[in-house]
Length: 582
Image 1 (cartoon, rainbow, N blue to C red):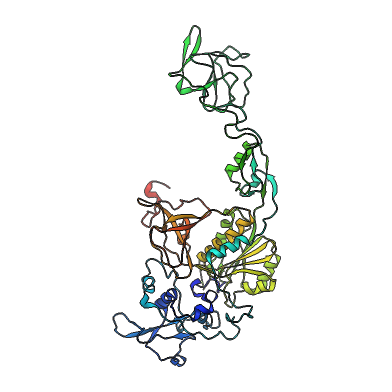
Image 2 (image 1 turned 45 degrees about the vertical axis):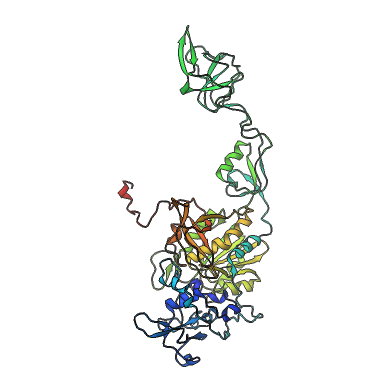
């Protein structure tokens, strides 16, 4: 997974077309990276870099274009390395170890377009536009993007919306529906409309505790016919069917949900009636006239037998189970939940303890299985795999899951085995790179009819991006769920973005006096970070070029209740005992 965990913004070989590589219009996103990390040297004559340690495909700016170093007054050449040149740079894909002394290889920051990044706004200035370099074709065993016969050549990255659409359309027909008990249908999708098997309610019922009354008051409170005259009358309880007919001028106590007796014209709430002794008996008085039908739920008020309650394709929620039971169902016919299997790739991952000796904790394994469960997917705990091509091949060949999800190994590093393994399996690659940050090197492949693989990048937030971009629409289609309509909310603060790529940014809901509900961008948005998404309610889909405060953006809501972070601010106290809570 080491190649898959590299910063997504440094993997442009699969994102740039040959036309883009040779263009001379300047790429503000690449310019920002070069400004932040690109080496700066005195101006050089063309071709002079060969003897001075310059990288392949590097073009120094002329003196007229050079930026003046702050406070020095000296001109410095800003170096731009094209995407293809990066792929051919030693150390970037594992040819030689990269060290701090390795020249001309730009290090990509976690979040080059964070709102507080001073270089982000500088890169968007027209004065910073630079010419792209004329990059020679890659050599050796590296893929040649200009050679159509090279099976390993990267394909241009797909636009974000197009990639999501391909993922949803990859499923031509969901699995056949199955009939199960009500509880087993939770989280599945109805395969047929839910129609009422009975009237709801199936008889006239009392909506309140009180008295069932007949005609105008006052009313006599007599014992029902056939009951003992000793002691107070118990009245009509829920679950008991009254047999007597209530005559005009009579009343009888009744409980909420009890069947209203024949002859009753209304129910008088207990708090509205007054019982008084009268002539050896008791009478019920009301402070005002009781209109006919008051506090009676008539038969069929909610639905009549045969009415359609829900259409096919509806998600079976706990409320749907309750409605189905009330309507007379013991079983439901629904599409099965998709079955997924998760393989976490990487020799450097630890399952427990603190990071040590170059190894890091596995953050994706503990996160992905519960995330998939929240999407209604059946999956076992994530399975770790070493960076071994044979182990990956055996795992994929043996899997029977509807969807296999891998993490890491989707780039072109020395231990990135996903692409070669897919070719060995004869898989059909549907999506190979998406123009989105973070998460560019995600992929989608068809392993066999009805079985797919989603390859996620190894960086945690980049993996979340791939999960929401490709896995979620694919799994939703497998579950026969209808696509949710786009949900748009105004942005609470500006968000910078690369000129050609969509950006997914964690946001939390906030209330604003002018706009109402808004989406506030959260900090810690780098591809290797989870702190932002852990406090988020959704991911904002930021279009290429960024967005301003007040712009309405599409949101991808996370599959857990919104508002978990409601009220949270960076200044909020973290000592819960300050509020008296423990």
